[in-house]
Image (cartoon, rainbow, N blue to C red; front, side):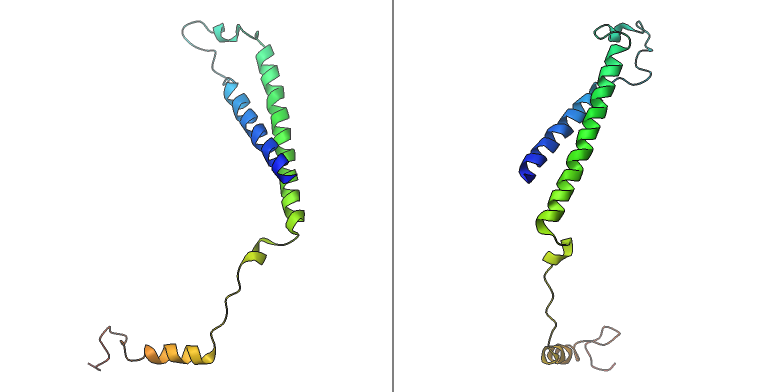
Length: 117
């Protein structure tokens, strides 16, 4: 079900991108070479209404598929995202003591090699 809903979601996203790119800006018809010539195919108001409705339907489909995918992902695992994080094993006191002893004479605060100067 998740694969099907994800496929529908991708299709809706591509449809929504296409519909938004087809729409005209508010000042698109105010050109020097004849103002309303670009609206001849759909009429003065027909394209705006149709593209606006398609945008709204695409948006509603996008929201519904997004919520559906979120609900399916949550109920499929029934867990939090941090349950898959591996737990770090704490070092034993012997390992910690060995690491502290190995680094004791390497350098002091000034960066010298521990010769006391």
